[in-house]
Structures are given as C-alpha cells and as structure tokens.
Image (cartoon, rainbow, N blue to C red; front, side, top):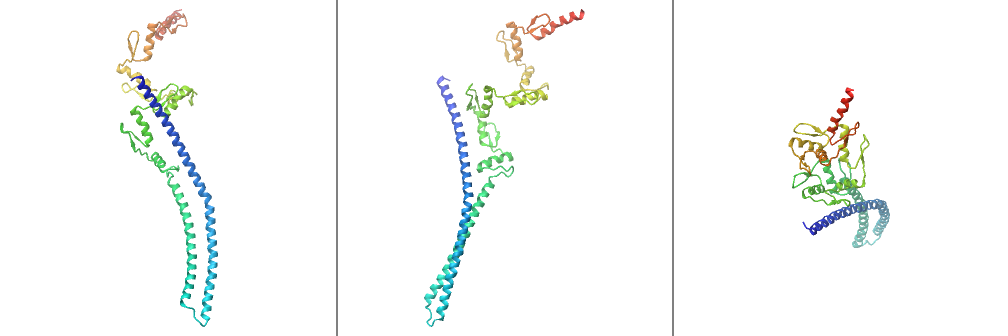
Amino acid sequence: MSSVQYLREFIKERLTAVCEEIFSEVQKTIVQYEEEINRQHRLLDISRKPDRNSHIIDLQQQHVGEEEEGLDEQQVCNQERNSSLDQEDPEPPQIKEEQEELCSSQEGEQLGLKQETDTSADNTAASESQTETREKSLQCDTCGKTFQYKCLLTAHLTVHTGEKPFPCSKCGKKFSQRTRLKSHMRIHTGEKPYFCSTCEKRFIRKIQLKNHMRIHTGEKSYPCSTCGKEFSQKSALKSHVRVHTGEKHHFCSTCGESFIWNMQLIRHRRIHTGEKSYPCSTCGKEFSQKSALKSHVRVHTGEKHHCCSTCGESFIWSMQLIRHRRIHTDKQFHA
C-alpha cells in the first residue's frame, strides 16, 4: 500500500470515529431535550387542572342562574296563558303554539348546557386517565423501572427475558440489542474506530480505549483488598487475586498440571508440542521458553549475574552458582 493510500485510509478512519462520537453526543442531547419537553408538558397539565375545575364551577353556576331565569320566564308564560284563558276572547292557536315553543326551547337550552358541562368534565377525566395509562404502560412490570419511549422499554425487557433477537450473520452469536451486535461485527470486519491519541493504538470498543488510556495517565483504580497493590485494569486485578487464593483455572489437557495464568499454560504446552518459538539471533539455536533464550544469550555476551557471596566468583547461570557453593560448604564440613 502506497503512502497516499495509507494516509487516505488513516484520515477516513479518523473521520469515521469522530463522526460516530459526534452523532452519539447529538443523540444524547436530543434525548435530554425530549425529556425536558415532556417534563414541561406534565407541569403544564398540572397547572391547568385548577383552571379546568374553576371553569367547570363557573359553567355550573351559570347553569343554575340560567335555570332560575328559565323558571321565571316559564312562570310568566304560565301566567300569560292562564290570564288568556280568563279573557272572553280566546287566544289564537298560533300565538299559543309560539309561546309553548319558546318555553320548550328554553328548557332545551338549559339541558344542552348541562350536557356540555358534563362532557367537558368527562373529557378532562379521560385525558388524565390516558396520561396515567401511558405512564404505566412505559413501566417495567418486573423491576419497576420507567422509560420515556416504548422502544427503550422493549429493549430493556430483554434483560429479564433473556431474549436475544439479533444474531451475528458470521458466527451465529446472538445479542439482546442491535447496538451490541453492531459493536460485535467489528471483530469480523477488523474495524477499529477508536484510537489512542498518545500512541495511536486502535480499538474496537470505546471502553477498551478508556481502559487503555490508564496506561498513559498512570491511573490505577483497582486496588487489591489483600495486599493493597493497585492495577489499571479490572482484569489484571482479577488475575492477581489468584495469587492469594491459589486458584488455578488453567489445566493442561496432556499432563493435567494446572496454572494460575493462561500464559503459563501456553508456555507449558510447548514442552509437549516441542514448539520452539524463540531462536537465538547469534547462533540460531531455538528455545521453547523466552526465559531460556534470555539465559542462553549470556553465553554470547559473557554476562555473569550470579555471584558467590563467599569468594566473589561470578557465573552465567544460577545452577552453576549452586554447584559452586558446595565447595565452600564441603570445606566447612571437613574443617
């Protein structure tokens, strides 16, 4: 790959990572705004309730007043009707019908006003009932946690049901949420959108980058409760605790020997397989253990790290020093 192509790919990956982070922040901001808007709506509904009640009372008082006026007018109609009967000339049938229609229309208006008042009160109660129903419908029946949107409640329910409706098309592994599947797919595609600004090492997930940054900052947030030693990674602390507990979870399937750490098991297996992955750059001799190669290199460099505390003679390997010390112990024994 030419330098121009490499630069193009590098810039493309950087821009993709930045865009994803910006989109994530924008999405969080939108959710916060929507929550604030819904909160304001609820406060507005609460503040409107007294106005609705006072409006209903006003309508009822108006209705009572109009009932009294209607009764007075009805009494006048009845009096006029009775007085007309006492007169010698009977009232024409047309006028009598108009008066009866006037009284009946007043009664109808009063009844309509009462029905309108009742309907307004019913609508208010129905609106409040719908709000309560909507809030209850967005509450998890198992743990009681509430959600603003139905999609969030649906995604949350998979925690309790164990449902994993999103399978990976490559390896078949299933996930409870689409975002987790999307993050998992990067393992197959090799995409690493999160990079360290210090050493430019790249990562699949954001949490991996966050943990990695502690190497540069020196932050060690995970102390051992037994010896107090601190670690920057939770996994490192978990592995360290086995030193105190003596747990050995890694077993050799050939000889059954167990080990605390997986790396110890990997090195041990080379004894059975005969694999020698560490060649000497000077003579080409190969070794199965890195420590064995390091010890061998001293033959070429002449380094002697093991000194006798009695005579000061130094040796390349510790085994040579052990054999040498017997000379001094034998002399002391014979003396």
